[in-house]
Length: 128
Image 1 (cartoon, rainbow, N blue to C red):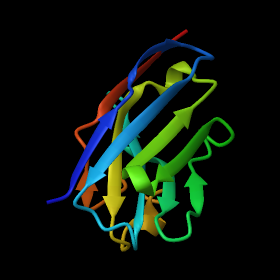
Image 2: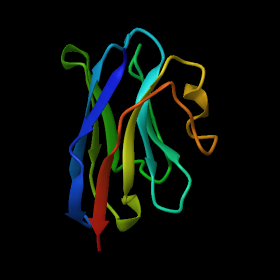
Image 3: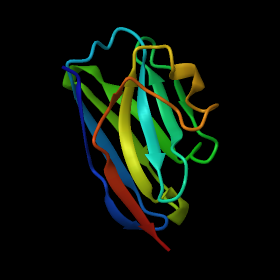
Image 4: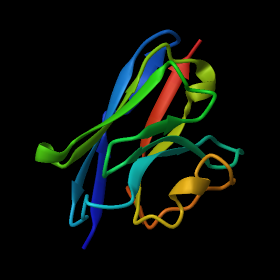
């Protein structure tokens, strides 16, 4: 059984930083991708960051490029999202997701994006 458990959300002022963590169990890292989606109230879900588990290639939504960094620690079975220079528009529920491959390429092209496995979400609130 695949389980994704997020932590690290919270409230921060604009310009601040947060690091989200996602502990993964039951998921095979050898293929597919992992990443983060977010959804703000009244808005569509969007893809934020993606990392291919084999090779480590990363991609980001235009809105977070240069501010967010996705990484993985395979030894700890943990995915991270380092978020710097946070803006009020980054306020959303953030979901750790994993996909075995079919949906990965669409994460930044389709709204809403899809994935095979989801965490329960962690709230990020950025105040101005």
